Image (cartoon, rainbow, N blue to C red; front, side, top):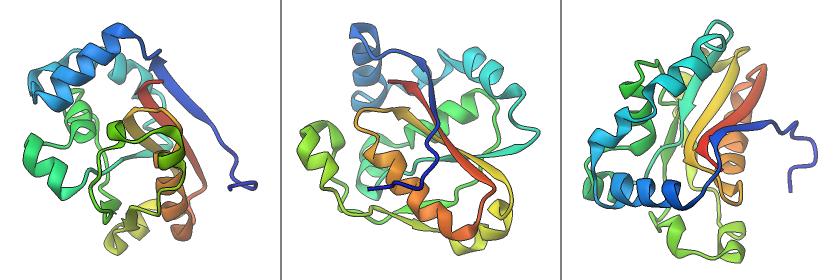
Length: 162
């Protein structure tokens, strides 16, 4: 679907039983203190990249933010003291990814829109899209597709787990 997208994704950890338990406690049960667990690793990863890049977190739906009380990606970044730009808004239906199979995820329509006031912050800069968990890649590809219209120098993606 994206033949001309120069894809580069990095993650810190493999998704395993620990990661699954962490994500359930953090996202589903709302244990926001768990955002501190990976702060040092995130700081180390992004330290050298912040000079030439801007961080853009994947937004959550309003429904998820209201239920959880926070955007899990933004809280991870904040807990690590990392600056970010809220360049995207979630305009999708707010259906949880975890409840979809691979085929349903791949058929998703674009759930993101670009926040037009942030376009000058991204033009000509390298962008790192950040998500908590990478499964099919559909979410980050949708986000990258939404950002391409503001002409960033490059877009790479990052997740805590993959």
